[in-house]
Length: 446
Image (cartoon, rainbow, N blue to C red; front, side):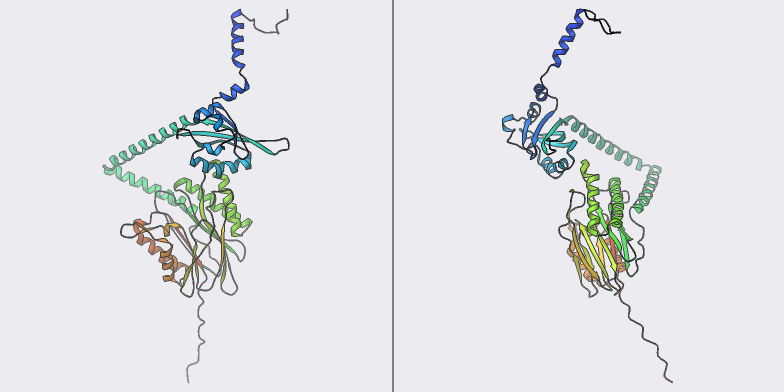
């Protein structure tokens, strides 16, 4: 008989041996059975998305049969319309670049027409020569998670409603009303200070140019998402930009801060407008879209260089932003179109629209955000001010210096009243009008 290892416990009764045999038998599932009956979905696809293998668990969730799926459908065919769009624009490109994605929330479509919320993880498998061969994907049923999130949202709505009712009740007491007013005033002061940290309070003087700026915040208790800046690049060139981020509040403030400092750093590295916006697109896409939380902005970035002849050369690049408006010295006004520019941060690479112009003495370039053109006008506030009306307004002001242009637009904005329900930023720069030379003094007749 063999000896027990030192310190081993005695085997006990024969019943223990029977339990060990039973437990061992339970562990002797085949690999195929483990794959097919796993508590999560498995599928393998070719690099073009064609499904090569899928387990019974996922087929059961979707109500599909294997013969109608393997070799006949692509992974994207199993997704809802929204999930398919996200897969084509984000999931698949990122997987090709990174080789692996984990925990991405998608929705799959069942054979009965229902939606199945899932969490998807995929990894690219490579051959012996390093070439990508197939994609293995794991799918987890996120229905319970979705229900939990919806319950949280419902409870949040209930809490907000209860808070609103409590505020109305407290408003009945004068002391409570005064306290609430004081709290709102302190919050407004704090937000105003924070808002000032996101946009410069004033613009630096630019030799040979005049500048003017205006910023309107639509709500005193929410941070705006518009931004602008003007700063020197070297002894002769100045960079400037203006834009609008998606959303409001703290998230918009965070995106605004990242955008401003990214554009400043990018311009110092490569001052070309197209390069600056391309860098910003890469930063925003990597920071947000690659993590499944896409955020974006529109932006227009320019370089202005005053010339020795009294004029100035301007080069502009735009990513999905409204076109700049030029007020000419001859009394005309026109837009500088930058066609083809895409929203910044949506895709890994984005086309950037560019344009170049020259400002003569007495001419002004105006940048603005869409809060101006999308202001609601008319008796019922059911019409948008629009780019045509802005062009006509600019033509009525031309020629005008930057400060005169911004002052006129400020008056216009105030006239919109509650029709101006979005943040609005204005940035104008121009070449001062040539002043007539004074006539030389003459001696009086004797």
